[in-house]
Image (tube, rainbow, N blue to C red; front, side, top):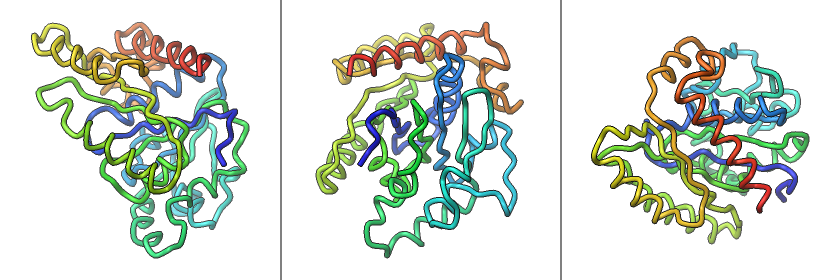
Length: 257
């Protein structure tokens, strides 16, 4: 059973390269800067969130793999990366879960079982890799809400309907009630004539849901290259302003729920 005091948000969509990790780490840090206790769970085998936060992982470091396999306990595998911000790291071993969990009974709930003891965070952000993987299904089961990053572009809505249908089918089959929280539009460039058309379409699609916009900003890439969040690299940047606004809106959104 999900801890009702904790907001567990899956940042996910099947499509890659839409800003899932960028949104995960910067939203999480924005919330942490507002004195919220936040945990990032890196569920991507590439470990992008782990690397972007400068967290060093060795062969002996507990990871999401060791936690989901029962080799290490979740509370002993979490490291602090910033004030009020914590991380359950990932590395290439996470990919092994796809085959090692495949034949297990109740494999979709491995993450929920492993994280059951974790109750002292106000927000848990799940940074997921692309695709309909077993690990991502675990994230969906564990999450209270799903937030979809959608990149502004010609194919920006590609895969959105497929993801929503898959999410609903999985929830129905596993008898879970993970909510579709809404969407965050990334790489928004209002100089492009196509932008307003896409934004209008997505606002309609997610009417009544949470909806945020992050403007295009090269500082985001530079920040990750320096293993910093946008608030550490340039807190006066457009992206820092947008993620700060998004964090405030997330807090308000959950207060209404």
